[in-house]
Image 1 (cartoon, rainbow, N blue to C red):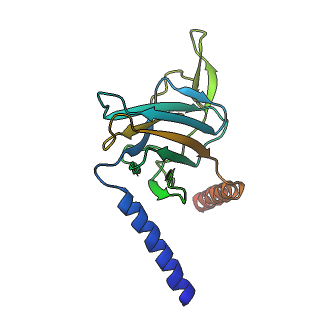
Image 2: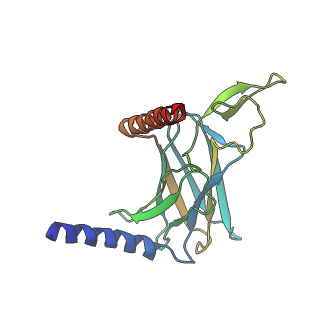
Image 3: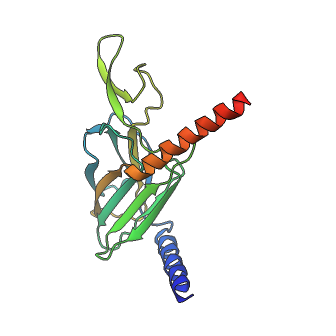
Length: 204
C-alpha cells in the first residue's frame, strides 16, 4: 500500500512540474512540417538561437529524416539563459499525440514529443528518388511521385519566443528515437493476428 501511495505521489509531482512550466510568457516548442531542410543521416542534431534587437516573435528550423528508419519520439534537450522556462505545444503536430516538458537536475529542460495512433505515425524516413525530369530529391519512403505533399519526413520545429529579451539565448540538442525492437515485434505480431482474424472471419 505504501508503494502505491509513493507511485501516485511521484506521478502527481511529475504532472505538477509539467503544469507549472507552461505559462503564457515562456518560450514554447512546437513540432510540425518543414521545408528546405537540413538532411539528417544520424538521429541527432542541434541548433541554437540568440534573440536579436529588435526582438523576433518566432524562430523556425527544420530537418529531413534520412536515417533509414521511422522515428517513434523526438527529444529536445534545451539549455537556456537564466530565467527562461521552456514548454511545448503539440496542437500542430502531425507526428505524435503528446508532448511534455521536464526539468533536469542541472536546470536544463527536456521537451519530448511522443505517442502514436492511427493518424500520428511518428516521423517517417526519406529516400532518394529520381524524378521524371532526371533530377533527384528526397521523398517519403515508398513515394516515387516527386510531388508528395505533405512531405512528412521533412519536419520543422517552431519556437514561440515570448518572454525572451534581446541577448537571451538557448541551445537545443535533438535526438530522434527509433522504436524498440520488442515494440516493433509486438506491433508486427498484432498486425499479423489482425490479418489472420480478418481472413478467417471473411471465410466464414
